[in-house]
Length: 209
Image 1 (cartoon, rainbow, N blue to C red):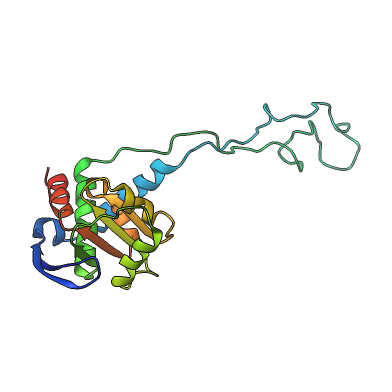
Image 2 (cartoon, rainbow, N blue to C red; image 1 turned 90 degrees about the vertical axis):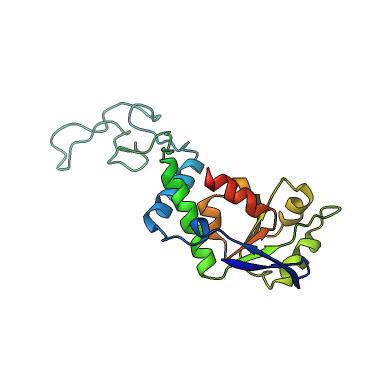
């Protein structure tokens, strides 16, 4: 697949790049994408939720009323789960939600996500650029050049570019990551994928291993 390379101001340059078909033009596997996104979101969960059960809740253990003769159901401790303010039955406790996923599945998921973006013509290749200082306005002007100021976008850079990253941080729908750190969730969550010219080699190197 051949794509034009654009300048930072949105105009076309004379250069073109070729995206490898084995990465950007495969038969997408939706189940692999689902598994990879599920793992990504599960690994982000803190799992610190905790509930009070009958043995841990604070309260008296005195029997509330006599066993028989009241005409109602028998009742014991005020910590009973059937009473308002009582304990929780089978409630959640701290746990680790992360799980392992085969590397080949994760690789296939990334191939599939990039293929979907390529088929939808949502990939934009731009020349490598940098900002002299962090400026949100500069990054917003960059997005406006491609009419993406109101859309979700993901920019892949070939190396850690602090000024570009800081310039995008205050823009809610924009995200900047290194190409070697790209994941399926970010690609699928973005409306448009912007790739710096030299980042293509990093993507091919990472996914080609």
